[in-house]
Length: 93
Image (cartoon, rainbow, N blue to C red):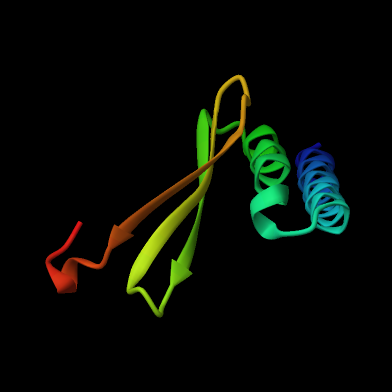
């Protein structure tokens, strides 16, 4: 009985992983940029993992910044935001 539960759990995890991969691939291929695809990607990630909130950040090495590209709060009303934070090493915010 334990083996059957483990196999079922593995199957469900694999199916979720494949569905997430497909959702991310579809979002990226249907969009002109990561910024445009970000809300759909975050919605898929939050739904798959049951997260309350998700955010996508990119690294802007030339500016020594992290940039928040999109935020997705529950119930998955994802929106694109552009916020930047300087590295703590520079002392700026």
